[in-house]
Image (cartoon, rainbow, N blue to C red):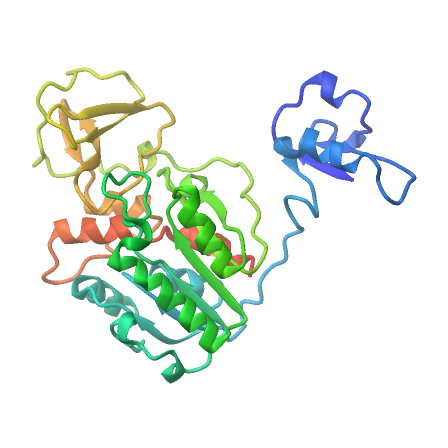
Length: 350
């Protein structure tokens, strides 16, 4: 049994294990002649948090067949981030249809996927009328479940009925694969979703690929291991230094905040809350303006621009650029969207 470590292991823990002389600092081996590995559980418990153990918390990566004609249906498609991810991995993928009702989201979606068929309101959709497909993908509204919401209603919220739609399509069409994305939530609704889908979610932070901290849960019926640690963008890499100076001004914020800090403002009380991050990453983008990250530049505080938000979501510049679509709407849509490289990562392991 081998652990490919990616964190420093204390000597007293590592002492006594065998090591590969070519990979001394990165490999720990548990050796035993007994086929039943009597101490395997202790090995996993001791070193599992320090790295990756094949067959336990990872499996060997296999490149996807990019020529596969993967047929998929997209529920609550939004601005088409899942579609972009699927087609970046499977260049011959076929969208048999999608469901989206937000007219502003549809403007962006149709800009990128004009020939995809919209089946309209998911609540009125008859799953039996859908063509057959291999993958069902969806990102149902997160507001009923979000731990950041002061008005969390879980399954009492009308929007949560879209999860029932996901289940109905899954049961009716029985696709080979499914993927559902949502926010980290309290144990009760998470347990219900896991029970209904018969799989446990994997929680992945988009900060592995973007300058944004964005934890999301992914329920899928294939194995997805945690991404390996590697350098990733920070805000310094994505900020527009030539951004317009028209900006929201905040009173009583420190004129010279600590250097190398990311500032965010929460406006859910009379006084508000200001917090600073030290990791060079943005806080999670949201659709509303009650919790916004802000940038200090040239002595002025400002919100992220649309282009900066697109970059934080791993999208190309001007992805949401559409005639007649206001910046405020673009920001809302981006706050609701999936993060492109995170979805690509999950899809790539299908």
